[in-house]
Image: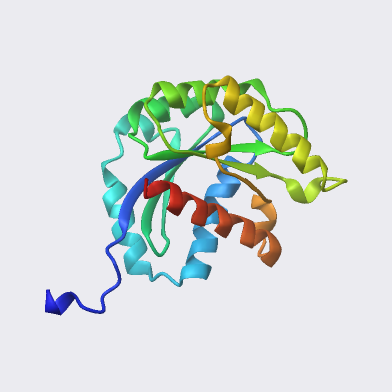
Length: 200
C-alpha cells in the first residue's frame, strides 16, 4: 500500500528465557540486555510498555518465581523471562518460549544443572538455542574461554544438538550492566545472534 512506503518493517514478537546453573549470571544478563537494547536501539518507553502489556498473559503459576522484561531490536520485540535455577522447569512447562539462552560461566566446568535445563528445554519443544559464555572478564588467561567453549559444545552434542548450529557468544553480563563498552558489545552481539536465530 502506498501509505506503507518508507515505514520500517513490522517487528516480530518473540518470547525467550534464560536457563542455566545458579550463580552463572542469568538475571544479570536479562537486566543487561534490556539496558543495552535501550541504549543501542534508542527505543522509546511507549514501545517497551506495549511489549510489557503483550506479556501480561503470563500464567499465574509463574508469577511467584518469574520476572519478565521487554526490549526491542531492529527486527524483534522480545519478552525475556528470567527465573531462579530451581524453577526453570516451571518456566519451560508454563510459558511457550520461542528460544532460550543457556548462560554458562567460563570459570570452570559446565555444571550438571545446565545439562538438566537443556534436557528440559528440548523436552518442552524449544527449537532455538544460543549460549552466553559469561564472566569472560574474570579469566586469568583469555585462552581459557576456548576451553570453556569446548566444554559447552561437548554438552550440546551430548544433548543431541548440532553444536555447530548453536551460537556461543563470549561476554560479561556484569561488566555490560556496569556500562563497559567492550562488554556491552558482547550483549549486543548476543541480541544480533538471537535476531538471526528468530527469523528461522
